[in-house]
Length: 474
Image (cartoon, rainbow, N blue to C red):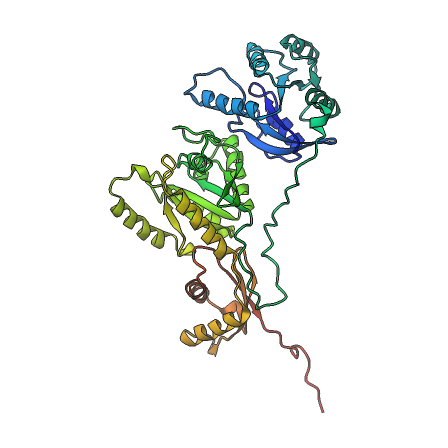
């Protein structure tokens, strides 16, 4: 992108609505409640013929530095310093407030280009608020309606005038190509093809867990900066925010998500939106880091989150955070291992790492576990190896007999990876009990190293070409 724009203003003036309008997607949560946005969220914006990077920010408020609002303000000021231009949004319908004047003065002191935007200008009685905006001393306000898409041409012209045509229409960087998250879900023509894992491909990771497990602190430690809002309060994160950095020469895109409480406790509309956003991040990711609070691990909700990730077919790694608070580490570690094996049989062999977001201990081991799990998630096994394995499995433990007839498993092949999926040809697919499927899945895990990832097995019946044809009479 040729330049960066930050959207700033006091709470509830329509910043996130304009952000969603410019990126063309409903990425930011929008609600009538003031202060929904807390972290700064980047996106790639398109406005007529302009292409630029845009940052949605929290509503600026005057507050003590140590308070939640004060930390939100610091995040917004960091976005302003990072950007080449700020869109200062005021509410034309409600009119100016003393806070608008304070924010205008702060932007003036920064010495960077500012476009004054009068949002909600379509509302009846908004003319007074529009003309009041001149008193801020930031030039002529640009009237728009972010919700209805009105005034976008004028906004485009105002941005070009403020930043200059050379910068506005500078050569874009090489466009990023989207990662095909389903590239493993296709059949290979050569059934004995075993692709080599690409150690350099970008990796998408979602970080999930209960509220106050330390997800944002963990990501900040990865980045080496206070990029995400953190604090002792539970439920600070609301949007799923993506950040990027390089780890050993590999691009990592990581999504911080809102804490997931038990469904019965999620009653407020805003929290429902936050949790839904977190679930979308899980479906979008390749690998999921599930953060447990090591001081109170394996709560019922922790188990629900792991089960959801497994059902979605994502690769998962457990991070036991706050390890710096544990005193008798050997005893706790043995207890965590025992509970992991006993309570999470659906992801047997899942990799688990003890970490500390506060001190940074264990982060390199955590990323190594993520990469190893992603390798397993992408793994493909040749058909010849699978059929030799199937023959051995059925000889060691034959399928059960149903109505006096022994079931036959004739052929197996891997039809997809990400996660590994297999199809078995059998004489009576509906008659195989679930216990025998579990036996086969456990065998695949042990014999081919498919530990810690979901495994899918489906069955296909054989076709009799003479079925339904009447016998000819001589």
